[in-house]
Image: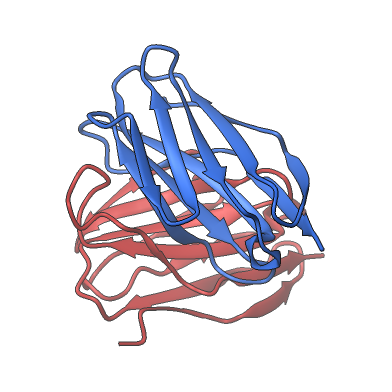
Length: 116
Length: 112
């Protein structure tokens, strides 16, 4: 199992550009999450999905969009990039919700994004 | 929504000493509390968790305690070693919730 994979690892964007961060998991997990990690600020939830075709907003969704057409993939779209979106982005997945038994969230390696 | 506060933000300990990190939560319905460790440049990984029906849980040199009345929980690391140097995050989740709320993290440095 590759676990949770993310591409790209690094990216520099100019203000106003758009891009998609890819996330794939091969563990047949139902739940998938996108977080951003700013220095000293912990992990902030952007969007999450409880299954294919179902997505919902987290704490900081503005400026982002997601889709979940398959169980494996959960891409994050940035439209009109802004310097405030400079961060490290982590995708995570789990088999069940936090209240469930198989609830451990497995994280991908992260994408470091800089917007100039 | 849930608000998790974590203290201290940085912690430096001598190798062999103990380290304690404390978190408070706001939602009295929260009942699941995991701790994640993130080594420099790496992804966060779950190290221990506790549910609200348990007051304490141990796994070798790490332990977590929960005080539901005061709405706080703590991570204890005993006999610290250099490989314990990392950022530690606490989190909380309430019943019927699909997500975790994370604290801001504690950077632990173990001095040789």
